[in-house]
Amino acid sequence: MNSFDLYTKTSPVKLFLTVAIPGAISMLASSLWGIFDSIFVGSFLGETAFAAMNLGIPFVLINNSLADLIGVGSAVPISIALGKGEKDEANNYFTCACITIVALGAISGFILYLGAPFILKAMGAEGELAELGIAYLRTYAIFSPFSTIVFAMDNFLRICGKIKSSMTLNIAMSAMILVVQYLCICVFKIGIIGSPIAVAGGQMICTVIALIPFIRGKLTLRFCRPRFSFRIVRQFVSSGFPNFLNNMASRITSILMNRVLLQMGGTAAVTVYGILLNIGDLVQYFLYGSCDSLQPAIGYNWGNNQDGRIKSIVKCTLVASAIISVGGMVLMQLLPETLVSLFLEEESRYLLPMTVKALRLYCLVNLFRWFPFAIQSFFIAIDKPAPASVISIMNSLVVPVALMILLYPLKLTGIWINAAVTAIIVSVLTIIILCWMKKGGQFELEPKK
Image (cartoon, rainbow, N blue to C red; front, side, top):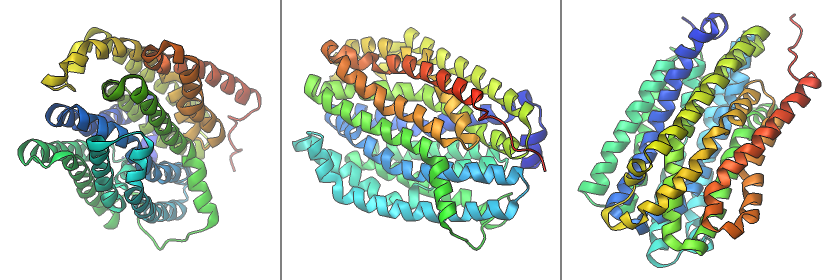
């Protein structure tokens, strides 16, 4: 089945089973290397190396988010253009996006390499902690021009209807990274730089594999002579900005959190927070995968003026998001010791009680986080960046930072419950935005020609 028929003619429930479930598995698989990366570093390199990685990873993810900005930002107009039958326009979007991502990766990698010592100093890291953090960041920076585009290839494959290919690629990438991580860290013992070498190397190889069918002209999207314009760049930035803003804001929040944690509880508190984020990411990536996989379907049908299908797809997304998120919370409440133990070496077992207590509070975020997340994804898919950006910035920066101040008297407990309280507040805000947009006719489709 070609991509147009898949997204515009398949029944919504079958479409969800065909697209969202493999997409969720794909996203979960692509996140496993990050989870195991933390396990390898924490278990084999120790608490200081794990803390150094957690101080550095927000900046790595900020660097990667530039590729995501263009990847998501181009996916929206590409899907809508294909829904309208404008294939040449879609191909130009695709070509310009790939070139832009590589250029941005080179620029951001250069800045990250030069700025690594200043970043760690500003974070309050000293001695061995700072040295390990600098090595970690600079190794990632070297690979940046060639590795970051992998975050966009997933979107492009799904737009072309290659759901299983996308899933297979992500599973292969994670498996490859895990093997190389084990060899670098556990066998050859090259230290903390083994982590970024393995990750970036796997990403580059999978990028090449993903590009081959596009280069050969075997998919819906094809490379063409690029026709850059200010309108195209503005479209990429506008459509991708909510997702980029979410990535940037959440990393800034993590940086501020780490700074506060170093003051409150030292390296141990940073380690606990890093474990919470890694366990929480298992649910978040699964949630993101299911929502993100359905964005092309919503975009195709928005461009093709199929209002009824859009509503059905959104309902499926909301139900699935709730099940995934609440199910993740139940799992964390039932098996906290098992999950936490994966990230602690024998010498750091003294952190187990503290981390288990923190996880039981932190996981309450999953009761509410799914709703604003799914609605934000819907806004992005129909090219409504303004409300998506409001939800994003409130969820990732404004509310959690405000709560960091308000809950400061609770010390570390205030940090652990921050995410859950944020999710409640942002869920209420999302309902208000939905009602306001519906009243203003923001969901009306263009009249069919």
